[in-house]
Length: 116
Image (cartoon, helix red, strand yellow):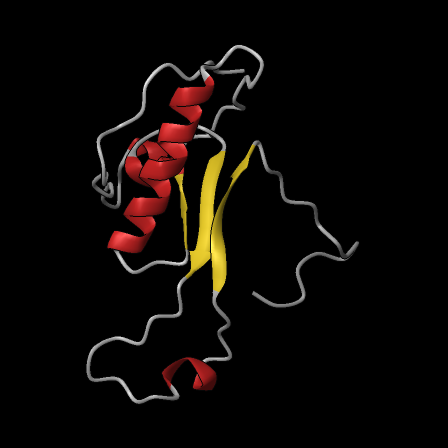
């Protein structure tokens, strides 16, 4: 488990393809020993970076940190010049941003992934 002691500046730069952080197995965060203020700061950094780049999700490794933490959220703001029904056509619904720490993915089907 990894103790978190610092967070990057706001907003963070996205790493580019080929960066080792994108292929490395992210480390579990030790919530018990990590500074809560630093975790909150990292959550704000992830959320602000996600919104800055127009995304709906971002993981810590996308800003070069190999931690098991991600932010999700969709403001569903219509881009300038887009039609009024822009998000309806994409079946998108706005939802508040939140962060997940030490999340894991569980396969729901025994035979593997049916669609990707």
